[in-house]
Length: 318
Ligand code: MEV
Image (cartoon, rainbow, N blue to C red):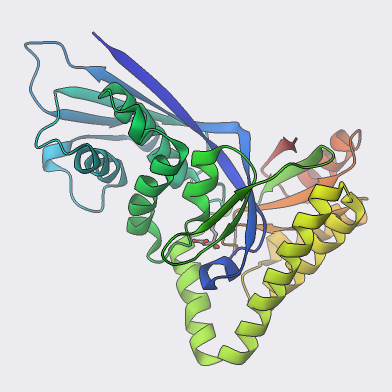
């Protein structure tokens, strides 16, 4: 019985969340300490026919044929079926595991979709549909179920598995991978508070509609920071990068997407000597990131845990 497995990492937004939905540039990076994995297995003859979808971590077990259109796992499978032009799929069991906390800003939904798409396209003998570009495009369609108006940055970074500079554009997004001049050490600390990206993104839209001038200015400020951050990353200027993160956090506070818990972790990191810190992702819960000097990891991690972080991951961009 043929078995195909594939995975996709978690992600952090380094600069530009929310503003990216409005066409400003943003930078995201994979977090490989956590990942989603999908396994596609031919179902042995004699067992019930169809495609079985199993996600033990989500306590989910369904059949593709009877799943509803809000089921993201089923949506990922249907995207592959349509892209491959198959009227019917063979009998399969698709099992998904993920160590990425859900609704925490680490791109869990995008990573699960990308892992399923990558494993299934390969299993069906269609490596042409398993490229980063194709996986990102198919995962974007799945993201729409959860997020309404996603910018496309989450599915892009988990499909490319590299830091990306991203701009939402018509007809094609700008997606640039780039080299960092020096390793960038980041701590990713979870407030433990779950937050719906769709809800926060639509609340920002409501505020933007009510105060377009003020919000356009905030978004443009974030775009300016993302452009400067890319130059700082390419030059290895970590001190400037940290300052830019602090400024981005202030703009996100002005957008009302921070929270007391996020602000506490950001302030704790800043006063304990992090080069910079900000919330990451949609906000109002989820994760924050702190830029640290190598060697400071243990003490900064202890600081963040003492300030209420539920989990602290490390990520090094090279
Ligand atoms: C979520 O990771 C990032 C947001 O900018 C939403 C999006 O880009 O779709 C908040």
